[in-house]
Amino acid sequence: MTGSLYAKFEETFRRLPEKIALRTPAARTWTFAELAAEACRYANALEALGIEPGDRVTVQIDKSPANLFLYLAVLGAGGVYQPLNPAYTESETEYFVSDASPKIAVCAPARQRAMRDLGDRHQVQAVMNLDAEGMGSLADLAARMDARHQTVPRAADDLAGLVYTSGTTGRAKGAMITHDNLISNAEALVKLWRLQEGDTLLHALPVFHVHGLFVAINTALMAGAGILWFPKFDAASAMAHLPQATVLMGVPTFYTRLLEQKSFAKETCRNMRVFISGSAPLLAATHREFSTRTGHAILERYGMTETGMITSNPYDGAREAGSVGHALPGVSVRIRGEQPGVVEVKGPNVFKGYWRLPEKTAEDFTEDGYFITGDVGTLADDGRLAIVGRAKDLVISGGFNVYPKEIEVLLDEMEGVVESAVIGVPHPDFGEGVVAVLAVTDACADETVILGFLKHRLAGFKLPKRIFKVGELPRNAMGKVQKAALRERYREIFKTS
Ligand code: MLC
Ligand code: AMP
Image 1 (cartoon, rainbow, N blue to C red):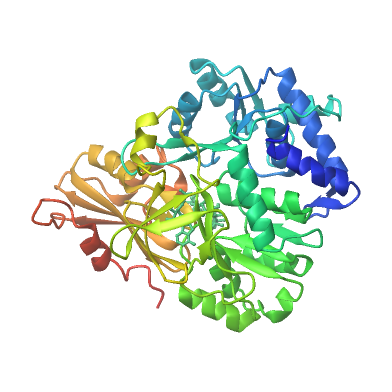
Image 2: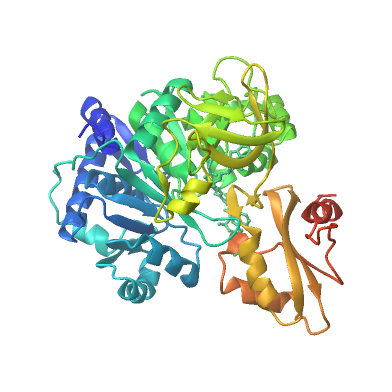
């Protein structure tokens, strides 16, 4: 039992049974005891469906309180939580299911049939559903179950999550995340950010990535903080509820969108203790404007799916714009050779490896056990890290990762496309906007047809916001496409006024 993340949450459930754990914007509430009871009902439902320790449960649903119950239930039943963005198309989803080989899949009711077909092809034992209100066949089954459940013991090194992250070449890889990875990281963050029972976290992040799922939920539950649970981020609604909150965790787009709200000011943040940002670079200009408008210096931290959180700015002391702060206690960060250079990390936060890909795992670790992040940074003498670029071909749009290769492969299939280059350029809302530059012949289809072709195959956030057709792509002496030159050429296209 000692190794189980769920057992850590149970300490809070026992300590604060009557305290409000969860509240929706419509003011529906659950105490910690009620949250535990729901988690138990769902865990019993999963057991009735045949889950055994170590089984993956793929979850591709809209965010609702039931999503939280299900996450807790998978942990309590000794399973491995495998979240997927509901925006993924059927073909994208099929890859993940075939690779993760879950015992149980939970999807939106509208996708039940497609998921069932897919499940049949990949030996998924049970396909259940939950809608955006948390209703569906899994909720019905859970409602008939006992509200007590014996937590399944897990060792520290057992898997708690399998979270996919795309590769710069080839297909997405499943990051195997252990109970100890999550416990050690959440414990460090609770301490560092001083999270406690008196806090209320405004939770508006999706729960299919590590930021909303592990960083936000795990720290709040361990600290006994209340969670204000939003289905998604909407700046006006977040602003209206901020006076009831003390902590916000968001991607930089949350902060630029809040600043766009005319009446967003010090008064809105009167009860706020800390604003935390991560998953993408926070512009120094955003940091400064936020501080002027609200009196709060946003606390920026840096992490990855494979590593959880790596560094954080301090709670006390200077939260510097452009710096992602110091390594968390117990975590070691280094840059080998000249600076700026690729950031490497070692510690209890670092994942166990890529699912069923031992060779890829070995490639991404140094001989002395450091994980190679692919982010380029500078490390100051006082241990502060700044992320200044990426050695990996990756675009981060509104906190979502977009891998150019995945889009280029599809574009290159199209008639009239000689070759393509997908890049990210500064975007006022998403930080980086996806742009496709195509070298074409006269036979190339128009933009609407190209987008229609991509739309069938890719989730919406990956679609290029602009497409440019050119005679040929710029190349260096080695014949390699110069993406840096393209980024420079198109760097102004999303500039407002
Ligand atoms: C949505 N759209 C996006 C987008 N999000 N396009 C580009 N980039 C994005 N991030 C598109 C949709 O496809 C849709 O297109 C249209 O915008 C409206 O969709 P929406 O869902 O209503 O969008 P919106 O609410 O505006 O979403 C923006 C957002 C969201 C910023 C609130 O993207 C978001 O919650 N991002 C957080 C991502 C996150 O959690 N990252 C953490 C990764 S973990 P159309 O054409 O259909 O209208 C990690 C590790 C770490 O990185 O360190 O934390
Ligand atoms: P993911 O694979 O979705 O976990 O995304 C991880 C990547 O997000 C990291 O490798 C970084 O490139 C980026 N990232 C996360 N936090 C920050 C930050 N504070 N500043 C810059 N980049 C960040």
